[in-house]
Length: 101
Image (cartoon, rainbow, N blue to C red):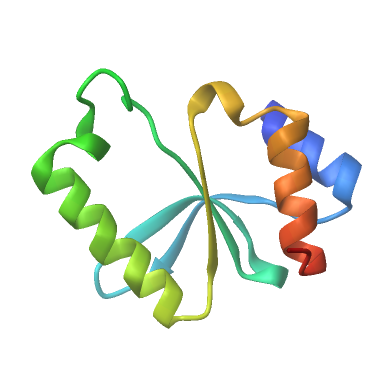
């Protein structure tokens, strides 16, 4: 089991599913899904190195995917790889589950 999944499950007592397919037509996947709360966690790599998520076509495709998530009732958390296994991200997930502002 990966460290992120183990941490969230231990600290927040929720199940995390990696590479969850939320759209069968487009075959889109979420990096991590907390299905019971419809929370999607996307790890955005290459932020400062012109990675796929920051170049034109990749950015536009991500927008389409993220809008589809929203239409289907998901809440999206986006993090950089360096922030995935942190208290900051854990608290963000907890606040999203609890509906905190």
